Amino acid sequence: MPDRVTLAPGHHLYRGADDVWRLYAPGDQITRIGGPDEVLVGAQKRLHGASTAADGALVAELERGLMRRGALAPAAQTKIARPWTVVVAGDNPIGRAVRTMLEHYADLRSPSARPVNEDDVRAADTLVTCGGWLTDRAWSELDGWCRRHGTAWHMSYVEGTRHYLGPMYVPGRTASYRDARGRRLAASGVPDELRGFWAYLESEAVLPPVPWPDPAGAAVIAGFLVGDLVRHRRTGVPATVDHQLGFDPADGTVTRHPVLSLPETASIPAATPVPPAAETTAMAGTAQ
Image 1 (spheres, rainbow, N blue to C red):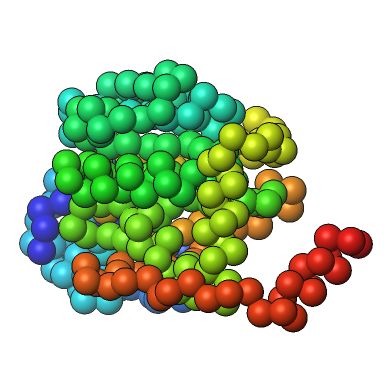
Image 2: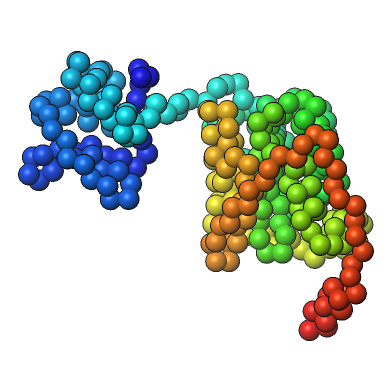
């Protein structure tokens, strides 16, 4: 058993009103625990983080029993390995909120108004791109740089009125933008149209303004991004492994979309023309 353990998240060890001790587990699962009061008091202090001392063989025996029940976990690593260089791209409400949250954790660097280049990726431990409308060509290139230099990368972008985050890429361990892009095109009935829409978003055409969230919405999005970055720095993996989150600031809903890594030899299915019925529906939808 690890030297430093705590109760697993959501668990409590406490003395009831009848002086009998209980273990509370999520889902209102309550188990009575017998034993000398001084042993249980010592275990409570240690497992609730108020003491690091094992306090004798009886406490150790109790902890082994709790471990078998799945009620214990290794003590959380609270320190961030430093130095930690993070490049934050995006001069917008989300990018600014991310910088504010990260400034006490990392050495922050920013490409300012220019796009991220390969030198930025090479110099960073972690990259986070807070985008507006999706920039598929630029992000496909960025994905390649991150793979080449082993740089972890997180991102967010706007589609419609929703903000999509990730999946956060950890080299050799998780899915990335390349995988999310490939899976989406493969699942689309009209991949040609999707590619065309993405190309338009990176063209010189006049685009509608990005519906940036208010400060509260930006803080939520930034919190998800920074939470993944910090968890990855502490444990090696983000909180939302191989998932893309979708957040709607208007109603506060959050969706989770699993993203599986593509085999290195996988190819995206050839584009198919838009069926006449789909074209007619699209035209009718526009007219309304």
